[in-house]
Structure formats: C-alpha cells, structure tokens
Image (cartoon, rainbow over all chains, first blue to last red; front, side, top):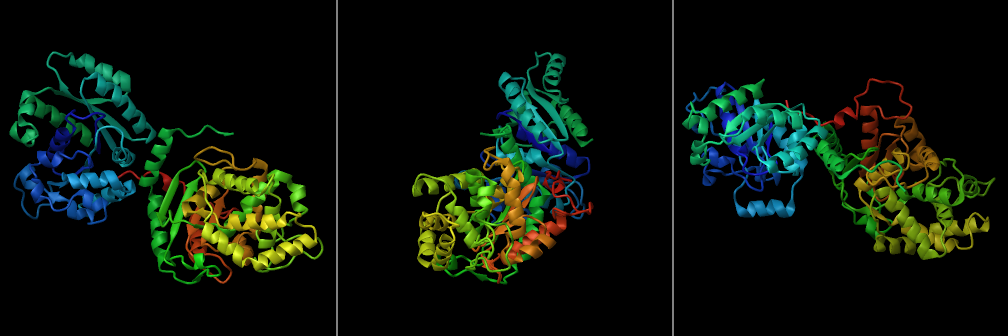
Length: 252
Length: 343
C-alpha cells in the first residue's frame, strides 16, 4: 500500500504509522518503509532514535547491505510485548537516513529506482509480510511513482485545503496512468466547523474516488507532535476511532 | 516530420516506472547472470582500440516499439559500432537513389565468404550484399552530398535519427581503421575497376571508416532496432529515420546476410533480422514489437559476439520470437513488461 500526499504537512506519516499499528494489532505482519529519502521522519513517530539505526534504506539503495539488514522489529515499542516465537503481530520499520551527508549523496548520485522495487519484493518475501506500507515523499517523484506502479492500494491523504485539492488531481492522473487497482482518499485536519457531508460529496464528485476516512483537526494530535503512536496514547479519541474505521476498510 | 503523436512527458515517465517494476527486468537479469560465466571467444585485436576492450563487459538492452526500455549490465558502455552500421547506410543509399539504382551497384545474396573477402560476383561484378565490406563500401559511395563533410554529416544525422540523440565518431578508432584498411582499399580499387563505385570512392572509403568508428551503447543498438521494429520511426522521439517502404529491405538483408557466415543458421534457428559487429555489438529486430541490443566484446571464429548470439538465441527460444514461429504457447514477452503488483 502506497500512502501519499501531493504536499507536505497533510499528516501522511502519522496516518501511516498509526494505520500500521492498527493493522498489525489485528493480527498481521506489517512492514513500513520510509521512501521519503529527501525528508525522512516516520522513524520519529516510532520512537526509533537515529543512533539506534545502523543501516537504512539508503545503504540498501547504494548496494551497501541487503534490505533485510535495514529492517527493524519495532513490535514491542509500537504494539507491546509479544512472545518471542509469536510470528504475529509484528511491525518492521525500514527507515531512511536522517544524516545530511547521506541525503546529499542521494541528491548528487541518484540511484536506480528499479532497485527500490527489488527491495520491496525482498522485504515481503524475507519478512513474510502480510502488508507493506510505503510512506512516500510528497509531490511527484520517482520513489512515489514506482510505489504507485507496484502497489495494490494507493491511499491519498489530503487536507480540505485548496492547494491540496488542486495538487491531488495531478497525482490522480498519474495513478490512473499507472493503472492502480484501488485508489482511496482520506481527508485529514478537517476544522470542526466544516460541513463534513458536503466536503465528502465534493471530493468524491471531483475525483471519482471513495473517501474512506475523515479525520478531524485535533489539538491532542498536534500536542503529541509526532512524539509517538497516537492510537496507543489516546485509544478512545474520535481521531483514533476514525483511524480504526480507515484501517478496517483498507484491509478489505 | 513525425508520423505519430509523440509520447508526452508524462507517458515517458510512467513508462520508465513500468519498466522498473516489470518482471522482464528480472528475466533479463537472470539471462545476464547465466551468460556472465560464458567466457568463450576472443576480443578483436586487429586495431589496438578494439584490443583494449574489457572482455568482461556485458550489456543487454531491449526497447519496445512503443518506447519502453529495459537495460541490464553494461548497457551504457560505449564501443565502436563497426559492421552494425552497414544496414543503415544501405538504407540511406536507398533513400538517396531508390531501389533499382542501388541494386545495380550491390547485390543482396548471402555469401559464404568472410566479410572482408576481396571478391565480387563474377557475373555482375557487384559486391554480394551490403553487409560484407565490399558492399558496405559500395553503399557508402552512394551516400549523396556536395562534398565529404556534407556526406559525413548526413551519415551521422541518419544515425542520430535512429538512436534518438547525436552520435560521435571515436577519432582514435577512425585513425586506426584508416591506417590498417589495406584490404578495404584493395576492394575499393577492384570495384572502381568494374565501375561499381564512383570516382570519389577514396572519399567513400574515408566515410566507411568513419561509419565503423561511431560510438554507441547497447541501449543505442536496442533503440535503433526498435526504430526499425516501429516501421522506421523512433519510438521515443517520433522522428522518422527511414522511409517506411525501405524498412523491409533492411530487415531482409539483415535476416539473410547480417550475421556473417553464421547468417543461414541464424535465420534458421533464431529467425530474427540482426546485425553484428566486431566491436562486440549485436542488434536484433522483432518486427512490430521491439529491438534487442547486446554488447560483449568476445567474438567467435566468425566474428560474432559469443554472448550476444547466446542471449538472442535464448530470448528467441523463451518467448517464441522467431518470425516464422507457428507455435502459440510460449511465454509472452509483453506480459512480462507489465508492472508486477506486490503480493
């Protein structure tokens, strides 16, 4: 599943992390890959400190290690204690490097995007994943396009914001050309005063794709400030319950 | 000049992504791995520049008639095109003079002799076909132009139309070719004796040495092949490289005469119009569908790239590419070009 926004700040990484936890908790092996090489961040939400990360996606792309060595089992911190020989639930995080030098290297040298595809296949095989969530860099870029080309589900996150709405049209055109099977939209950061039914109608009419979730603009979410998994800290919150509904629909 | 609608930028980008995600990449990768261990043959050494080639170089490229490209290995290493240039200069001669005038100067019969044999058809005094050196010199002689620079320019522009970008001559190779080109000069003089070449044939010999020295990559060869597969129109730039009615003559000559004295068995077993060169390149065309380029400098006794021949043979076998194939149950090459969804 490729998760994407046309612009930054839509809440994509937080949504990805929380969905990953909810899907895993339902009894599955889930992998999360941060392909946002230019501005990595999802490892923060998983409370994975940079000094505890030895190998990253960058190392794999530059041929320095097999992708399995860049995968970290974050099950205990993200879901809780699981018996050591229990295969499910499990969550694995494959982070991108936050070191400036590494990011600069990718900018300068580039990499073979086909290798990214090989990496995804190897992750699914090697870790026996039931789900692979691919967190992408906002906007149009090779990592995103490749992820769309091979994904079964393409989840678009957008705010009820005119820039997001216009940009999403671009992404949808690309997704249609790449013949994605399922395209789903989640609206996030919806102000309390906005008419939600009308908003859903407008988006579904404009893009002809189903809106499978409507997440409110939430102070608690802002206060967590990407410091952790929201659904763990606030399981009964409106926001969390909407995420559960989204996770259920995605899994169908 | 373009016949069809040029694929837009978006389509090119999407195409690259599809190629990156296609199972065909894996198949080509496995082929590459398989034949990496094949180390038969020797690198051409009649000129020092060719002898310098790394015998381990090995690239495979495929470009479809709608512009999708797949590359594995050393697909961007440059090497001299050598004889692979011959069918295309033949094409230029056809455009400049028309079929009958060209056939009055060069035949289209395969010959069992070596490519550099100093021999002409006894009855007609014509060189046997455009793929042997004698025939290639005769077709180079037919390239129009007010003077030598213009003729060289037209020849290079023609290759640029096929490849989709400007091409350049390796000067060191060119100078070496002309310094050692004694047999070719002898053949030129013999043909002049019989009126098969014009009074500016010495200039044409220079043109011939230039054309052999053009630098290409195996991806370029696949693109050139794809242009022929696409009826003479480059699938990415949509520029027409040769008039549609001449495409069949190039492909026929390649099928019957393209692989030196292996041409008969090649047409029989592999069944694809192809041309090889002593620089280590082979281009093969699957008409209507794609061009295949292979690069590996080690040559067999007949002057064909050892790995190149094996790769083409294996692709033809696996996917039923023989142009006269009657059996329909081979794996589909086109199916392997679709992005494989993760599962």
